[in-house]
Amino acid sequence: MSTTNDTLKKSTLVPIIIIAGLFFIFGFVTWINGALIPYMKTINELTDTQSYLVASASYISFVVMALPASYIIKKIGFKSGMSLGLIVMAVGALIFVPAAGARTYWMFLVAIFIQGIGMTLLQTASNPYITILGPIESGAKRIAIMGIANKVAGALGSVIFGAILLTGIDDVKEKLTTISEVEKDQLLNSTADSVVMPYIIMAIVLVVLGILIRKAPLPHVEAAPIEAPKDGEKSKTSIFQFPHLWLGVLALFVYVGVEVIAGDTIIAYGIALDIPTEQAKFFTLLTLMAMVFTYALGVFLIPKYISQAFALKASAVLGIVLSFAIVFTSGFTSVLFVAALGFANALVWPAVWPLALTGLGKFTKTASALLIMGISGGAILPLLYGVLVDNKKEHLTSSGINEISATAEAASHGYWILLPCYIIILYYAFFGHKVGLKKS
Image (cartoon, rainbow, N blue to C red; front, side, top):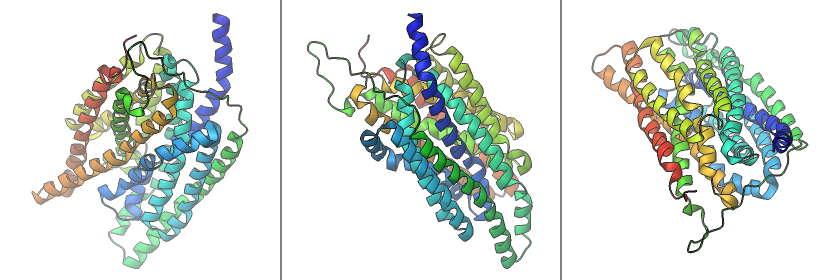
């Protein structure tokens, strides 16, 4: 038995390393949004709500492309789907060049949306692949390893792009209030140019990797067949006969929303609390490092010491506690509680995937596309956070509260949106993942 397990581990080691590399790539691309949001807000002179369209443009692509991506992957296979995803991401990166030249917000959003399409292909292929590469009960462990690669890359991306895009941004904002319109255009145009070279380099790297992945030694894998129906039971004929899957989609929808809020709003939140941008630009790093630590813990604990369902329960409870802590504290302490959401969020994605895909058999690829559509929570919930912040700020300033205090209180108020999301995740952890499944 031990020899069989050793052989299985060796046969899956190289594929796991390769897929971890892919998770590293889309982690890097995804988590630079935390730096892009305040950067875009400055160079395009946006409101909070408008600036969070950066996240919306990236994540709404998962709704638009998830089912088409599933169809494409059925036709061309997991490996070719991953390669195509990387090439499409490269195209999106190149569009940043004319967008910066024109300093046109909608062009930036188109570029981010196209990169999101590439990531949809990549995720629709790589998530189910890594889930079914080994035993389903250890699926969360393998996805936790992917999460480490994803968030380490995100930490690097947020630091690198924070340094490139946000260094000196406070000086730029200060100058904008005192210079003429002509000088303002010149200053904003020169600031916009700072994204050009990083995205050209990104495009080149993505194209090279897209070519290399076609040659990678990835074995063909398929999900386990659906369990044969017992006497008197009907066989499953539709994806709509798996309620635990659809509840899993809802759980992922709210989870990705709170994860993106935790990572992408924390820099802007720090700035709203009057913390200098030179310090605030590192706050996303705190969130991601909390996630990396918890992923590593998950790799060690799951499934030997705790189950996937237990990890999900603990994550949801912690998320609820931290949601209250954020809104009832202030200053840097509150920022630290936002960063601590990384501990609550890390194991949700790894736990939901194998729980939601349990018993799906031939429906696994379609189910994976539906779960990927849940990523659209990252498009909608941060935008709702921005709306809550803008509305609260408008109400406070109209009541006579000064701009600085109103901005800080409004930014904190927006985090109330986290609470119902973690309650939904808690329901899935205790009950939702069992709905419609036969007791074994």
